[in-house]
Image (cartoon, rainbow, N blue to C red; front, side):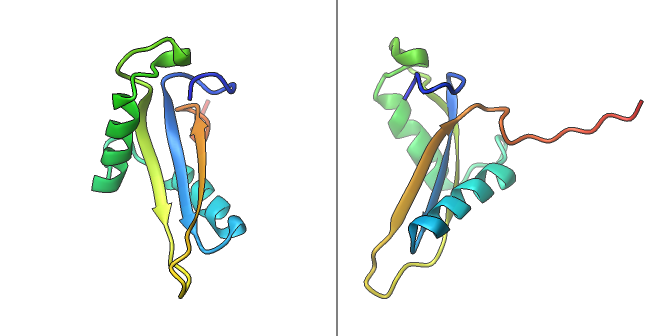
Length: 101
């Protein structure tokens, strides 16, 4: 966590799917649909566990490495295999705003 060019503390974007392509697509959709005010139990758990590692902003230590997790989980293969795509993102990266002048 930390460096990598994303804002710290960051937001984790996570996609889980049947292929690398699907996991990446799910991760991108998680960024689009993510809501800081509405976190699933699994999203809250991931955020809590990452913060417990005490990595902190820029890896300097501290209790807030991640402010939220945005996650989309798709179907699994019959074999049960899952592919995970994770990206630590800037909290403003996927946001869209409109202003009328």
